[in-house]
Each structure stands twice: as C-alpha cells, then as structure tokens.
Image 1: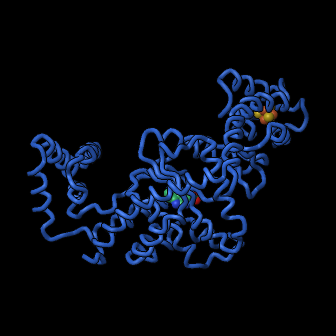
Image 2: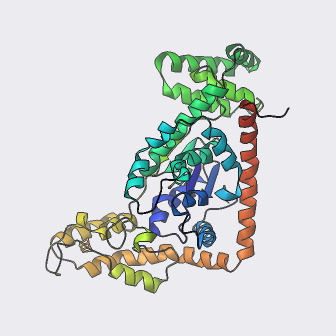
Image 3: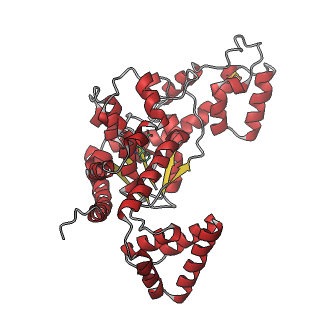
Length: 394
Ligand code: TRP
Ligand code: SF4
C-alpha cells in the first residue's frame, strides 16, 4: 500500500477520520509506505514556502502521535527519496501530454485558482504521484474519491511502460520455461487460472493467480514479473498496475459547514486543548433553520450531525433525531454529547504529540530511518526501470 499526504502542518479531525484511521488499520495488514508529499506542495504553493519544513515536521509528529508506527509501516518524506524524481523523469519520456491535460482536476484548478498554475510542475502533478506509487510497486493506494483519477492515470502510465519496455520476442517461450520449472501443482493452478481469466475474463482467477505468485518465495523477481505479465498478455509487468483503495471515510465537516480544512480556518486540530475544543464546538454552525431554541431543526442540514455519526451510539443518534426535529433538545445539549468522546479521543494524541515534540532529535532519527528504508526499495525498482529503458551500464 502506498499513500501520501500534502504537508499542511498539524493534523485536524478531518485528516484523522478521513485517512489516518484507515492507515492505522492497514499498517498491520499490509506492507505500507506512507509519506509526506512536500514536492506536491510546491506544485501549487511554490510562492509560499515559508514554514514548509516545519509543516512537514509537525505532520510527522502527528502521524506518530496517532499511532502510525515506524515498526509497522515505512514513514518518510518524499523529497528525501530523490528516486521519486528520477522515476518521474523517466516516466515523463513516455507520458503523452494529452493524458495530463485531460485529468479533470487539472483544467478546473488551473482556471479557478487565484495562483498562477500555468507551470510545468503543476501539469506534472499526477505524474509525480504516479512515480510515488510505482516506485514501490504499490498494489493498493488508500485515497479519497478525489484522487481516483490520479490512480487511474497511474495505471495507464504503468501499462504503457510495460508495453514499451516489457515486451521481448521470446516472451512466451520464457514464460513457459519458467512454468516448467515450478512445482507441478503450482504450474497446474497457474495455467488453469490464467485460462479462466483469458477465456472468461474471470477476475477472481486473476487475483488467485497473483496471490499464488506472491507466495513463490524462491522464484527470482524478474521471473515473477514475467509470469505476472503472462497472465494478462505478453509483456513483463515491470511496474504493476495499482488499484485505488477507496477509504470508507467519515465525513467531517468544518465549524462553518464547509469541508474541514486548515485554509478555511474551520478545523479542530488533533493537538487542540480541551478548552479550545469546547469553545470551537460551541461556536460550530448548526441547522440555519433553527434560529431559536423553539424552532425544530433537521440533522441532515447540520454539521454537528456528522460528528454524531463518528462519536455517538445508536441511542444517542435516535435522541438527536427526535429531539432536533421536535425542538425537544437544544443545540448546546446536542453538542455536549459529542464533546466528551471527542476530548477523550484527542487526549492521548495530544499527550503523545507533546512527548514527540520534546524529543525532536528522536523524531528526526525516525524520519531518517524511514527515508533510508524507502530508498532501498525505491533503488531496486529504479535499477530495473533503468535497465529496461536501456540505461544500465552492464
Ligand atoms: N495527491 C494526493 C493528495 O492531494 C497526495 C499524494 C501525493 C498521494 N502522492 C501520492 C496520494 C501517492 C497517494 C499516493 O491527497
Ligand atoms: Fe444540529 Fe443538534 Fe442543533 Fe439539531 S439539535 S440543529 S443536530 S446541533
């Protein structure tokens, strides 16, 4: 699994419930690479770099404080793994301009943003993201819906790369020879699943065959790529195509009813002190139709209701629904019910963050280690990619 986050500094509840909570689970189930995408920040904010490195540090502190663990996942910073940039350059050679120009968010942002984004770097944003993913041969990319097009684009780039550099004239003979050397049972299963997929388009068989390949510890990487590619066609899978792993994110609305975001100044931060959490929550927007305590309201029109989805049990939710619609409860009562669980959730995170902040050298050492681990993996991929493109010096 590979995912990145742009460095906006201290995390808020939107980050936590939208992404981090999923990552916390994933890190124990998969091999995970999580990084802070500081180069991506520059694609849009190249004129406002003040504080960037502090934002990166703060974000890492909050990741750690939430429980992302360097023992379970690789946590690092994009710009400290320059191999991403090298792969980005190599991929740029084969990426049609039109693919980048037609990414939906590109034109939209270009036209709507008050920044000047008519730059080469901003056009290349999705390709940099593709390199981020492909350099770890990521299979799954945990992201929100807004990133789906970027992962799709990553697949197209990988497919094109494999097609250009993974085809060899003796491909089929080589694949068959590798199969002949496999255990009889494995070869039989592989062939059967390959046929199921090729003749009937059975995706489960394709998945089963991939699973089988992953379990073949003693077979060299190059041979596995070849067998992986042979499942679908006749070229080696040098860069596997990733799937988006859409996070079952909880929507956390900001204090003013818009999406929670630092730039809207409508966020509750994870390190926020209880007093401040309380103050912000009490000032949070409610259903505009409920001007007075005696006016009935509609939870669907109220951002506080989104918080109940996260923090309240079924009884409490029923209490809100009835009480709001009948004006039986006041908005202060209603908000008070989420206040305690929210403060309880944030307490350990805030305390952890304080400990990490008191040990800056320790955090820097963890970051350094994560970056080195990521580089080792990235270098392997890059070597193969370079060789496939004719750049190896053997
Ligand atoms: N573009 C992503 C976002 O805005 C951040 C990102 C950069 C990313 N590189 C990535 C996400 C690689 C997943 C994989 O949220
Ligand atoms: Fe929102 Fe609760 Fe007030 Fe209804 S009672 S408007 S859900 S805060």
